[in-house]
Amino acid sequence: MVYLDNAATTRISEEVLEAMLPFLKEEYGNPSSIYNFSRAARLAIEQAREKTAAAIKADKSEIFFTSGGTEADNWALKSVARAMAGSGKKHIITSAFEHYAVLHSAQALEKEGFDLTYLPVGKEGVVTAEKVDDAIRPDTGLVSVMYVNNELGTLMPIDEIGLVCRENGIIFHTDAVQAAGNVEIDVESQNIDLLSLSAHKINGPKGTGALYCRSGVNLAPLIHGGAQERGKRAGTENVAGIAGFGRAIEIAAANIREKNKKLAPLHDKILAEVLKLPRTYLNGDKEKRVPSIMNFTFEGIEGESLLLMLDIQGICASAGSACSSGSLSPSHVLTALGMDEDIAHGSLRVSLGAYNTEDDVNALAAALPKIVNQLRVISPLWREINRR
Ligand SMILES: *Cc1c(COP(=O)(O)O)cnc(C)c1O
Image (cartoon, rainbow, N blue to C red; front, top):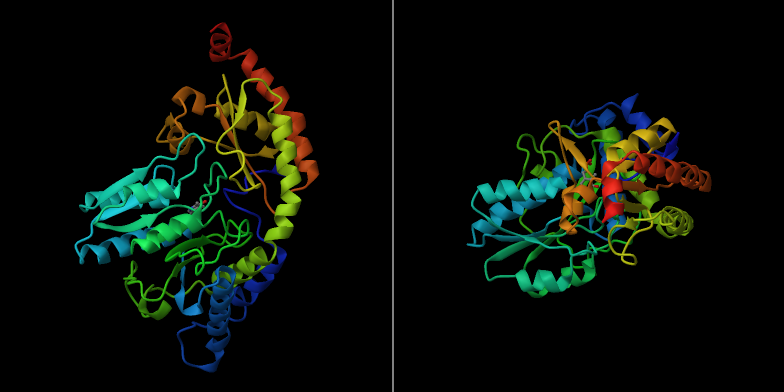
């Protein structure tokens, strides 16, 4: 099996699994209980909090564990929006190609009466600080722009956007799920007020994540119940998951340079091989990107057929489009780039992770051109394109 879908999820690392196992076995105490037996569980959560804080240059009191990136995004948007409504602000700025965890939270807030601006991302798939600045109104209270786009791998100028928000007294949230382990994160120098993380994108377990919330920013709970997470996020903690997340982010943050040094040549080789094919493009900016995610469009074919054929060869990748309720609609990320719907259908995302090797790249390079050619031979769309 050749796994090239690391933006969807990653393999859990041996070190992370080791960090989790005690809490799935003998150390099963409830972290909220007062007897001595529960101390190990409580300590594990606090150590994971310190590691998470260190990875993004925050204070441990600013880290709240969640069930993943989706919950962190929902929490950030909904909590800040409802708090700012109290001070008469009702305008929120985000972008057209956010993850659905942000986009659908934004749409839910629109139904509650908030005004939303969805910034365009251009052909390059980058949200500029200038666009953010231009969209700011007197009643703007929140900006949410992702750090790295999960379908394209494009990198946003988070420092510049953070500065614009700070200068205008606006709260700035960034979904950094695909940034962790790939680029440096410094919530202080980058003026980030809230930031979402997920464990399973960085060789950690599924179902665990965190929200960073700068001290002083009013964070109302999203999940009500007990007093866990300092009364901000109720529910008995996922101790093993949190312990695993702490270890995963510690390793990810320590290995950014090393990982990029390893992945950059693999990225370059995939690009060189794939772009040899005619009428084939890399989507998004060529420079402002992380080496771990690439998105290609092959004119004249269907991404789904491409994925099935790759699967037969044991290669896991992903289409740029999502299949929703039986009807195939192209990805909102690709249409946000201004791509035609039928062209967007012929897209493929290849995403690299810590465990990929040159052999994986060679397997893709050997399989892909044959598959693309086979599909084009039988494609009426391809024939039509060549007749134009
Ligand atoms: C995966 C992902 C999420 C969702 O995280 P989960 O932990 O799977 O809920 C949010 N945002 C981005 C950019 C992602 O890639």
